Amino acid sequence: MTLKNQLKNVCNLNNLEEICDIFNKNLPIFLSKEEIKTTIDNHLFEWLQENKTSSKIFSKKAKIRLGKQKFHIHLKDLKTHIFFKISVFTKKGYHISWTSLHYVSTNKGLLYFQRTSTDEIFCFYAHFFDRLGERVFDETNRDLIIKEYIYSMMEENSVKIYNTINKDVQICKSDGIILGSFGLLKKGNSEEPTGRIIVYNTFLSTAMLKNNQKEMWIKAMAKKLKSEDPYIVVYER
Image 1 (cartoon, rainbow, N blue to C red):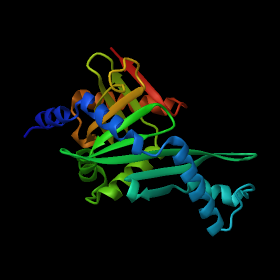
Image 2: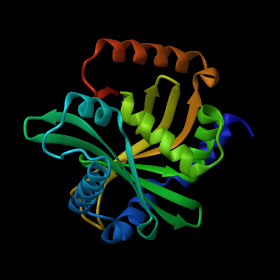
Image 3: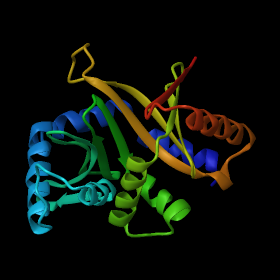
């Protein structure tokens, strides 16, 4: 099967309306943002206690150590991963950057929903992580692939290129391009969107890129190098 046909089949699976229905159906059992923040605070407090570090006064050495530390909480009973790190230290403490990954079983395999502090929802079928393991991490353990992927995204800014006509999106990273689609997340028959949902279909390593994809990736990497903005978004019509 050609790559084009593989992508076509994956895109057929990723029906946005169906995915939105699955998300809205499971949203009541997902942790709320407030519950996620409470879980993070408790976990970090325990970590600081175990490492004999004050949660109010950080030495220069402690800041360096904490600044490099990434945290992962896997709540298996809630089918939820939480990843976080301290992004900024302040006079009164610190600010946390976090993301959560909720997973549900479907007739097409596991479906993962990634949430952050924004109104965007990122969605992945298990296929995405399997391809990522083959093409980037040389790993078959999906939990390890997920952890490596999230950690890499926490460290590296990416360039998102949206095509507003065909609703395609390409996320350019240093190791390749994520191909996906996007739409508005709505609840039931409501006309008012509650956010944007982005479905990640598959990943192409730099070695797999064709001429036009390679050219786009080179331009995106140049834009990333010149920009100080951690959220680089390009809209194309």
